[in-house]
Length: 622
Image (cartoon, rainbow, N blue to C red):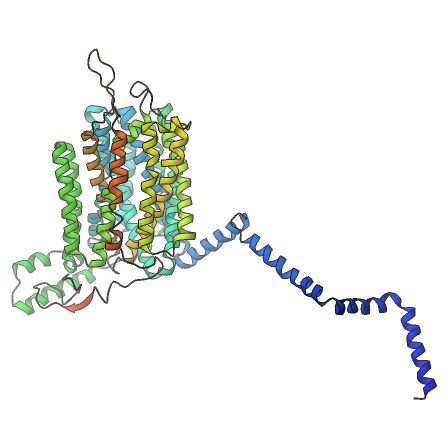
């Protein structure tokens, strides 16, 4: 191109740039600015990711309702995918309607029923309450029977039908028949059968969900959280009935309100939501014939011992030591009830201590080390936290005639408002356990929750000593934020890992029996605790009923209650903390620790004249 032509061409380009100043000049200006200020450009580009991160943090904040909505949706979806919707409905019906609601009607409703309607003393109330709770310690019998004697081919279904009908009739009778102090044992027996309904439903559903948790150990705490979350919802529901009815009407009416909650469990059972396969008679017979043939082949004739063993169902023959311990646990519970009806306080004390020692020794004999140690630890924790409801409940609800300067709570506050607060606190405990403690080791959870629960007992002592009045704190506020809230949060955080631990040490194939054995012995620990508590109330001279002699004033006396609370709720429970390092395995709750390898060997038994060719035996001689 010629120089002149090139010049003309350049002039034309300059003219075009001048004709389009807005479009053409703005872009180079931005480019130039960005070249002159590279640092500012980097800062500007970093603002977007920072704002996105901040938004994400706000979305994940626990104070954001949408966070909890997403968490709840994912939580329920995970449960349904792992355990099916029908099974969750069954568990909800059992643990909301039966164990949550009915259990609260029985355990919280007995105080106004026996105190206001029947008119018995605190020690009598504690004894009757102990008798009503005995079925929870007889879970081993229930599990053994259901495991070995199916009804029409089912190990669980028809036992649940029978228990539901028995419980419904018991609640209906409690709401209709007349009871007074002279025949109060009738009410105690009806409460016993109502508890038998709840214990059966709880046990057989526990055995099934323990089996499910063993199949999916990584989600075990999720299912436990669901079960005890709906349980607390049932507690809340029953609490709304108990207080208002007890204050304004006859306490009998609350048990009529319990009847529909007892009947509703028939619906998921009828729908077939319980995952259970029908067993055939031929399979059981084959096992028994095989066993007899083994004995004849080995000895040429049936020994006397083999004849007795051959009469037992297969699972009892396979685990005779488990059967013996299950029988001993349930038998000791029945004996405890009998001695409280017929024996003196000294006889009750001797029997309680003797039964506790015998059960611990039997556990060491019948179970391998992992199961035995966990079982003994949880049993002793229940025994050492001595329950003194007969003194404590009567102190809080005593009339002004009995205790002029006492809290004088009405039932609406003591059994409704405080129970609602306790249920909410227990939900908090579930959330804290699920979000904060689910990956902790068993040892850490148990010793820490025990220590905190002991500290929570200071609130009860402060009220009994009237220290809260010196601080200007009312009795209701002190009780609400102490016993009703702190205790329930810590109790739930302590109870849930015990359920997880129990589920992890249940051998496959005997879930109902082993779960019944461990849970039943823990409940027996609570019964022993109540028995010891009745003795301690008498020993400390606490008098709960106004029974003045002629010319004397009311003789209620709660002077020694603070010392009783210190011994029973602080000093003795602290003694269980060192046992954590001795009896509890040092593993995380989310880990699946083996019950085999070190403790179990599948071996051939050549020294025992039984019908077994192999048995599960530990190195300690089981």
